[in-house]
Length: 132
Image (cartoon, rainbow, N blue to C red; front, top):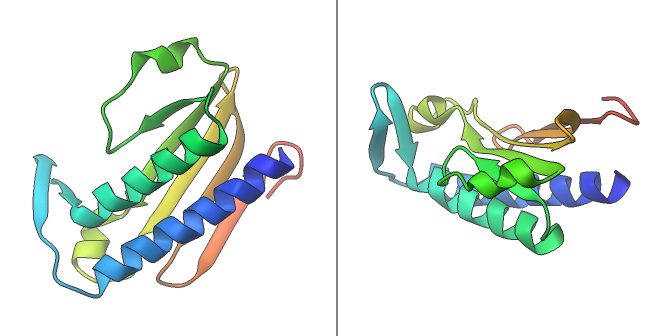
């Protein structure tokens, strides 16, 4: 789980850098549903995170908030869960309270989680084997 944690931390930091590049400029807002905004930052961070997870862990499943679900993930023992930017409304309002969230479940049990707020450069992480 050490390798997974280190890779995930690096992915979260780089995704955060992507978010901050867009955060400082103008950005358009689309709506996925009522009161459910999405921005180019969500999409850019998602594209990066998913590509990196696939590159490092090609046999794992991935479920991401900003991507079409691939039901084949249900046949996988390891599944990554991605919210490329939790707090899109706060991002839009430039409050700074948004975060990259990436987690891993193995056999349906949560094993790893990383939360990174690029605006404050704070990262929180845990694994089932080392704790938080």
